[in-house]
Image 1: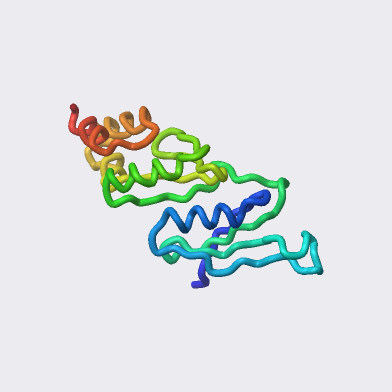
Image 2: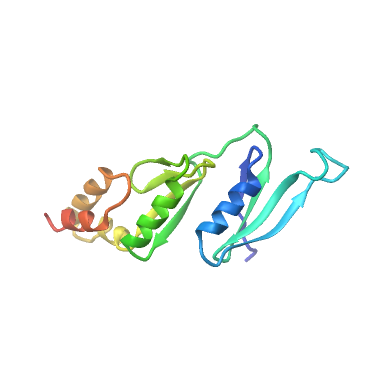
Length: 158
């Protein structure tokens, strides 16, 4: 199967966004920065695209101008090992202009949507005991950042 690379469209912040993302996630790096040449269409020397990897997953950030913007129709899920890891990513990604949303979703300061998912959440909301799953899901719907202990307590009837 060919490798799939999400392309993220920014007005003019592709390099700033890529540098931020590789600073947030371990084992991440910028692999290539492409600049406009004298052939255009942008001013020679300005960044047109940035290839980067987040823990081995390739992405491309494009300075495409204001024609399109990122929205919640595309998001990146972070499957966290535990609550501490979820809290860390939530804090870093909502800092400096990021926006909290509901049910573990947020937008970072560049407009990219993320789902911060602590370990155990999917098992709780998909529990074969439908009453338990319903209680977990209802608790999750009341949260911005997911508190897995509170979701588990709700699932258990607490």
